[in-house]
Amino acid sequence: MADAEAFVALTPETLPTKLGGLDVLKTRIGSDPSAWRVREVGDGNLNLVFIVEGPAGAVIVKQALPYVRLVGESWPLPLKRSYFEYNALIRQADRDPGMVPEVFHFDRAQAIVVMEFLNPHIILRQALIRGEILPKIGKDLGRFAARTLFRGSDLSMSARARKEDLALFADNVELCDITENLVFSDPYFEAELNRHTPQLDGLVAELRADRDLKVEAQALKHLFVAKAETMLHGDLHTGSIMVTKNDTKVIDPEFAFYGPMALDVGMMLSNFWMSYFSQRGHEESGSRDEMRRFLIGVIDEIWETFVAEFSHLWRTERTGILYQRSLFEDRGDALGAELALSRVLGDIWTDMLGFAGIEMHRRILGLAHNADFETIADLDLRGACEAAALKFGRHLAVNRRSITGLTALAGLAERLDRGDIQ
Image (cartoon, rainbow, N blue to C red):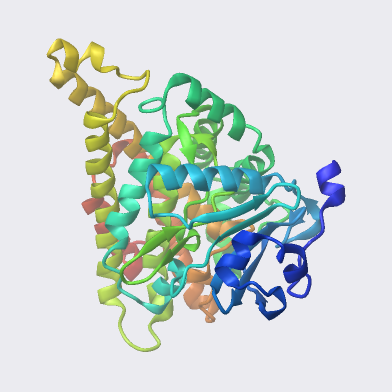
């Protein structure tokens, strides 16, 4: 409570005075804070984000607010979420160097993280809406997921270090509560904060009456709350990734916690599928067929890279308490280790599909929507794009145990996108 009472939200006018004494900022921005230029650029749901520029360079200053910015003070949130973001960033930087912004300063009492200014990077979602082809993202994101998920688990960490981290991130209760409700429950009934495109009324009623879908959504929620496998980013979507043609960075891990490996992968792939289904709404300047092919290729490449890198780490860095080498390779049973790997990856595949389907539903029916669809001004066209995504998401969630590969899913997505399947 003392931290919350002492908290003061920054403004562009007050930031130089509040942070101007920090040597780490003077070195990177300029020694005279009065010469700093400060812009508030946060467009997310939760936080203040400032770009601070000066003669020596620039940094990002991110400050948590004691409420959900998207809703206002009627929805309070603890400032400690910045503590979890800071701890997640430094762990991700260690587990996959170069894939997250460098952290320069952290102030827990004021919920401030000062980090690297990524320039000329833009938000990946914006790039996809524009129709930009980004050749590196598939491999970059597949490796990031494999390295952070494997190296943050009992497959790699010492038992003590992993349990200490589990205890630390277990306190991120309020942000987990947002996911537990807004992702897994609220889309499937008439929750107060829900909203959707009116043209979807009939389909939404069908989904909310769909017993099989609701059972699967709750089974996936059960996995989310009970399967503490590894440290997750927790909100890994195309709005949490910044890109150039040659570089990829993952940002905003304030939802970090210990949960099922499949969640991060499923959320990530879901957002590329949603981008695919939104392309019809962004064809003002011509066909987006090339973009559609690119997006399907990225989905394939992320999964293939994830499997390859996870398998490599399994064979070279499996030093934790799970599937010990003393039971397999050290006894001349490399095949046993490979069979265990196949089983682990099979479980991730099945659960990943389910999480991807639920993520599609919550981004169309819940509180926090995607710009992929929201920037389509024609509501009939937007509704058609969203309807295809909702049907695809339902298939992923309900039928995930019988889906054997991405090729069939690409064909289904194409038919739904064309309107061949009603």
